[in-house]
Image 1 (cartoon, rainbow, N blue to C red):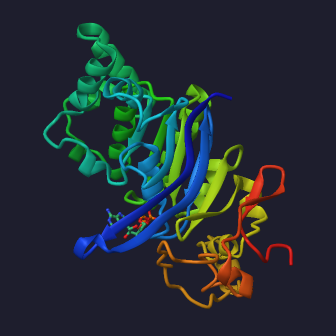
Image 2 (tube, protein in one colour):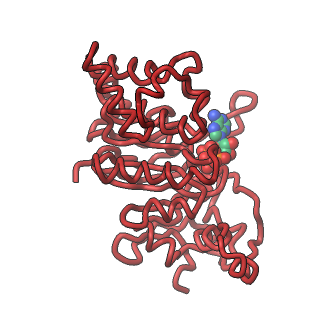
Image 3 (tube, rainbow, N blue to C red):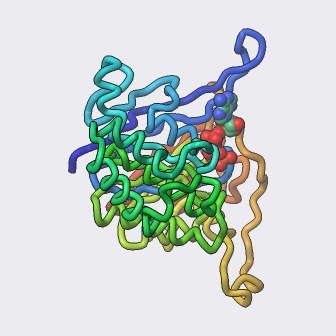
Length: 326
Ligand SMILES: Nc1ncnc2c1ncn2[C@@H]1O[C@H](COP(=O)(O)OP(=O)(O)OP(=O)(O)O)[C@@H](O)[C@H]1O
């Protein structure tokens, strides 16, 4: 499988205050690979570092240390021209489709302008490709939408348009940050289905940042991996359905068990595990131990002292936990 993105020992530290003396480690020693045709979901609650990781993958943010490779090339070492060449192959879709779409451009122009630029086409060919692209992402019949504006679309329609724009450069991977969080519940499954289709039908690798476990399950049901982030570290990683049905890390279990369930009877009767703390961990360079130790019901002295390594517990399934299996 040819690798599209490799994240090697990446950490991100944000500094603030007088002389930038105060700092916060938001990502710590992350290793991740995206290959051709992959599906990957990054899950975790708010503040765990998901967006920062997605932005680093897309070269919208620079890591404080570690390497980011696109197609085997270190993106911080290649020259501007090469970076520009590769940039179209890695596309990022923002959480808020409305903010990322030019409000004064017609839907035709939102797609045709970047298409003309990326594919060096004009006239009839440009018209046809714009039409094809809108139809590919489900804005049908395309010509009906040509002279409308993004604000004429529903949230789901705008997200489709943002995805179509990302496709203008023929990307190898699309990274979408919480692509369904700002759209109506009823339209969410259709957007996830669109990402599945882009992956299945066109072989585009898709990375989704999600905090909705149901959506993560739907996306990775047939194939794909889930990465669980807690306190800026990968605490569990593996085949999506395996993690959702057999979570190994205490945090993953809580995340899954506390996600909404449709059946009111089941929802009423379920017993939720209470954590010792619900605070988002603030990590610094001096922090020791497992980031989840302060909240975990099973922690030991070792958990407070030593960062647990990510170890393989079965084929394609890794967990970072000192108390796993004990
Ligand atoms: N530019 C920045 N400067 C300082 N701190 C930042 C910056 N960007 C993010 N952070 C902090 O880094 C932490 C992780 O943020 P991030 O947005 O990556 O998390 P997240 O898991 O995506 O959460 P959310 O779903 O709320 O966006 C947060 O505590 C956030 O406040």
